[in-house]
Length: 291
Length: 315
Figure 1 (cartoon, rainbow over the protein chains, first blue to last red):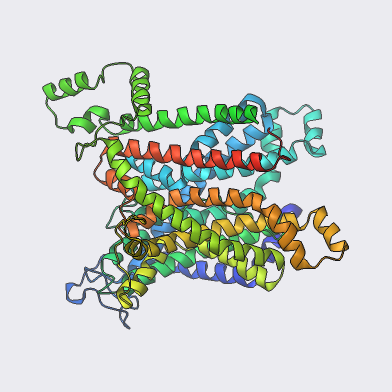
Figure 2: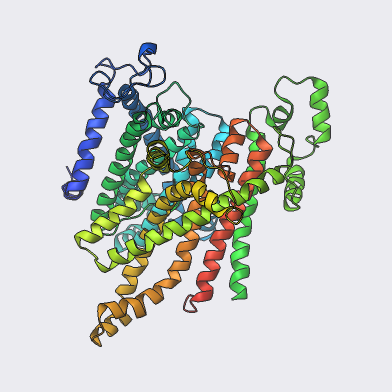
């Protein structure tokens, strides 16, 4: 293990040892294990029991049952699979597009910077959710469409973070030294600048996971996200809202799981960026990124 | 100053042109393209020939875009496929509802956000600051649709005080009914906006408090209260204007979800419904209008910022 990696891990451990991030990590671990073990444990999100529709919480169905008599807890756990995988895919997509954009824009400057940053402006010309809605209007309603739509709204954040990193790194001695040895721009960028720019980008990935989960759920709530019968938290809230008078817990409990998940990612991400940037101020979420 | 305004507008031009081109291109990205959108996928040869002729779909795409843009600038956004009414009319009917909601939510968001920001900036680094900063994280992280559902459960289902579904009642026509119908959606959206405004304002207050004139005032022996009231808040009024703009801009996006929770007949719900019914001209028109409003709010914020503070370079 290299010294850099070891000191990085020390920082991460320090960031996560405070109470709020520690609780968040524990919560996410429970959620992820439940999602992974759901099938082996015999949970079925699609098993209907019309004799027991819209029941409140009970020993047998801790979150109650939905309008088809399906177990809401099982659906919430399977919803975690949908939500977490879609969000992870969206964040990776956003980073895969945004980071190279920011690196090139910041490193080369000039016309490349101007063109790439206008592209970022273009993505920011609409509120994130409107951009996602426009994309879904074109792509149709599917899990892939939700992933791409959520992912593209995250591109500007990564482009800006990466660009800011490069701008602060490119005049540093070690980068100038590599250049002076005759390294090509590509080598300098990928082998020298990028390894030193990683940590804020990684912290941003965790913060953006919370935004992605929120946005994916919002799309499902609007009825344009991942189509049923795939269980998703947003879709459960959408349906649960129809039965507020009959079964108030239907919408409330899955919403609670969703909210805790979003807050957990946000807490961990901000704790990490605070430690990495050596300051206590939160990196902040792009205003208006998701409702 | 005029030079700055012109430069800023010129900077916007490629963004607006690019965005409008993408909105125009939406209809070409749909499977089957514009013909399928207009006549359905199982149309006869004659029908296809007719719409191709009627809408000039056989002309070069660039020419079609130019004509579409010129018509849009003239206020003709085409016809809804669903109701056969002019798109602009449908949008104009919904716009006042969204504006009323946005103004109410911005007012609530700022009324909540300012005290939170001031208190947490003054108590920097203490438990109170952490608690209040947690407020922003909470306001931004908790999904508005869940907050809305909880509010409906409490005020409509349990207490029966307010309607569960909100209609649009113009504020000047029937103030009491307007308040009854707007308060829950406005509160839902306002809580979210308070997170945006508190986080932004705290940042600017913290940097104000660290500036030289505050140190001078302190060394003169002024009390913290006087320093904050006479000096810091006055200087923080500058970002306040920005906060209003940012809050309003946040409302534009947030309204989409909030309107759906309360089945409130605004512009955001119109877009969602139009996507559901594949009414592409309506989707395109509504997104174009929202784009223009959003970009204009951000532009006005930028311009006011420079206008109010002569120290800022017109760069």
